[in-house]
Image 1 (cartoon, helix red, strand yellow):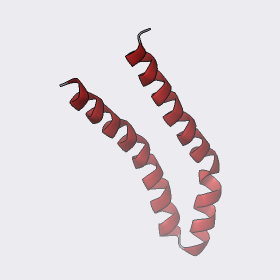
Image 2 (tube, one colour):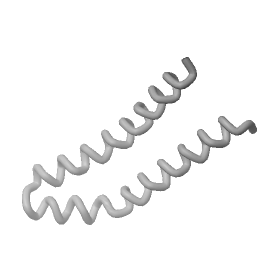
Image 3 (cartoon, helix red, strand yellow):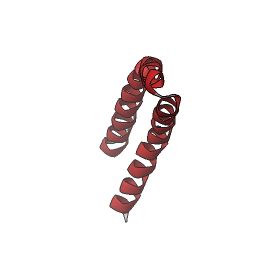
Length: 68
């Protein structure tokens, strides 16, 4: 495994760890926000899911731009 591959694997692992921790606390956050408004709770859940894919999309674009 070369340095570039190792750094990519470490970055992906850290991103997954952060999002897993967020997913662990997400139900409590959504329930608390849902007590204010169910729409806010739903929006928070949707933003969390979208953020997961957005982070990897941005990282892929950044790596593709660095290679060119």
